[in-house]
Image (cartoon, rainbow, N blue to C red):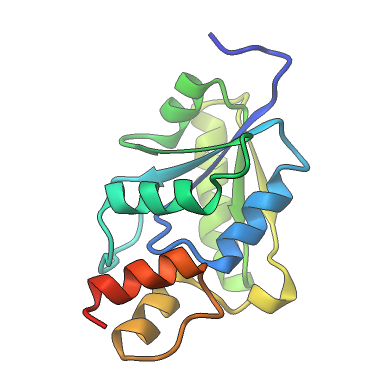
Length: 166
């Protein structure tokens, strides 16, 4: 069982790929929690065309945060509330880029709270420099040959170029 004096939060998502916007939210989340689990979902909640396997995403995220011992990365299947319970987490971190994100995220937070009343969701807005950024947009621009180097870490960029044959 986990130490109850240590606050554990989960930042779930597809992270395909992890972007500078995700990184910003991860580091800012550490102000709210003692330990953050970046959790890559095996099952996407929205239809997406994946660039990386779940295993590749976990490995990339681990490499991005290799110097931060308070960050763990793993994947999960099934309900987020069950994963949080298994990990001893009582806080979920979600990012909101625009008003259009709010309705969906609010519904998910309410459902998670109904399924697990002790689980709270915190919404963070991104740094203004990343407010337009999404992994889907980065994937699309990269697939079409655009320069995404400002939007992902060098390790992620190199892996994207490898996968896309560039």
